[in-house]
Image 1 (tube, rainbow, N blue to C red):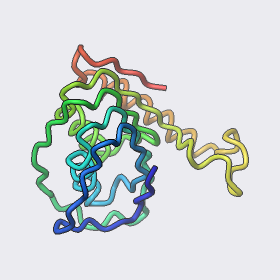
Image 2 (image 1 turned 180 degrees about the horizontal axis):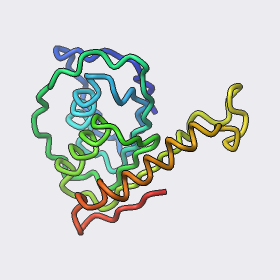
Image 3 (image 1 turned 180 degrees about the vertical axis):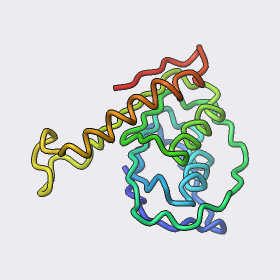
Image 4 (image 1 turned 30 degrees about the vertical axis):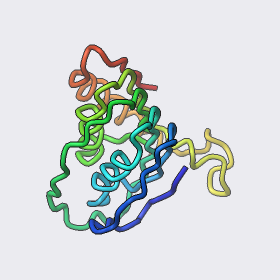
Length: 162
């Protein structure tokens, strides 16, 4: 598991090949303008990856949303993608679409709006202590995933929304 929330993307950085990596969990700032570039770099560096869990956090400051072109990165081994902390935000949808397009062996896509990695903590000792606003965001995200995203998922991919 890597926490790269707030990390700036450096296009000149060369990732080492992680040839034996089968399961990767990334905590990322979804609305960071380099988030899709980070994802692309990890996909290229992990040719044997079978399970990817993206845990999305969001920054109050979105910065300038410049369009960054990310090349294709076909991934023949990735079978399971989990999106935790899903929100109805264009940057999240773009990352999910990127994964569906490039993970050529994808069998299952799991969408979970709850930011489970934040619990327990001092702020939230129990998942039930999330608060009305957080739960409202999760309901909206779940509705968005079912209405907007599910229809874009290939019939060969099992779609699960928790």
